[in-house]
Amino acid sequence: MQQILYLVQKEFRQIARDRVMLGLLFVVPLIQIFILGNAVTTDVVDLRLVIHDADDTPMSRQLIESFAHTRYFKLVGREQRGGSTLTGHMDRSEAQLALSIPEGFQRDAVRGRSPALQLMVDGLDGNTAGIALAYAADISRNFQARLLEADPGLARRGAAIRGAEPEARYWYNPNLESKVYIVPGIMAIILVIITVFLTSMGIVREKEIGTLEQLLVTPIRSYQFIAGKIIPFTILGFLEIILAMVFVWLIFDISVAGSIPLLLAESALFLLTTLGLGILISTVAESQQQALFVAWFFMIFAMLLSGFFIPIANMPDAIQTITYANPVRYYLTVLREIYLKGSGPAELWKETASLAAFGVCMFGAAVWRFRRAHG
Image (cartoon, rainbow, N blue to C red; front, side, top):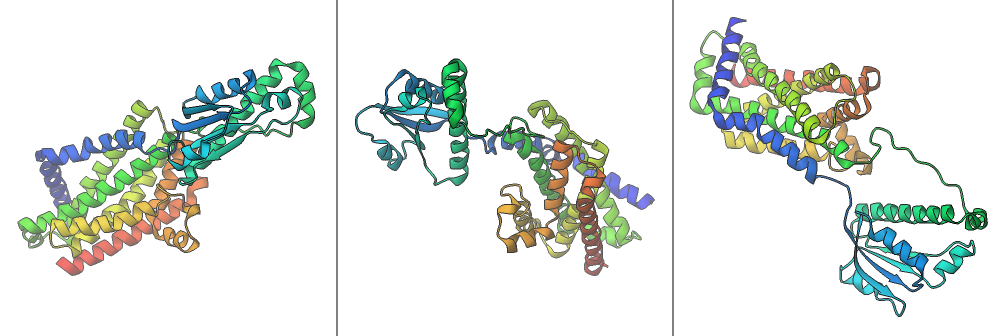
């Protein structure tokens, strides 16, 4: 036990003396969370909109104002009566949406008929197109509701043509803010990067400067050496998580809805996997450059197949099967469930069991491989 404590002290002293390492541990992750939390977003704003108003009536102008006075759309062109050149704007990529208001729009609305509107959306980016279409439909419904509210007679005539309107309520993210969903995912990705890089490159650095051989010729055992390496990085991993939670709460106003001790316990299982992977990489790499490339090779797959960038449900069936072998997938789910929904152990037992299995297997493989390489 004493040997392990000496190694832990050595690691902390080594890290404390390295100002660059301290910056990478405690400053860079916060900068990444701040920048990525604001930059990685699926919110759609300022979509370029052109409108052709063939009706040119007070009601059609009110509808145009409804589209213009919102942060979702930016009116870049407006035509009245005459021939429409909306398709030209779309072809030249001057607009992402084109709204055409036909003649008789106000007449049909006043008479209680269903007024027609034509909306063209640039579908090159399917995600943006779908969101833009939903925004436009919502503005049109609200406009119609205001008309009916302002004119009781029109409401009676329009009642015959109004269909059922479902009332949607969004749980866990009432305002549908993408940062609420993205930021916890960024925390998971940063934790993976830091712990895998630190462990793998820390041990390989010992190889390069020759201190690893010096340590291994001492009476210290392999498990004591690994424990002496793992404990400091585990403590640093927990400090990273706690620091990130406080930062996210202060900057993004996102707090943990569930149990913080449960979140830390799940993180401990996940750290067992990432630190084990770091040790495993250090046993095959002979230099820090090799460790960097091998670690990056694994992390690219881990991040892209975790569901952080692309929903796993949208991936091909074969790729979805492969994602079950990715521990980041489970930790990401756990983090979002606890952070946003306040889920407990009963809801997360599958992910917990998977993380525990990955941690035991990865750590066991790392110890076995380390003994073979340096035993």
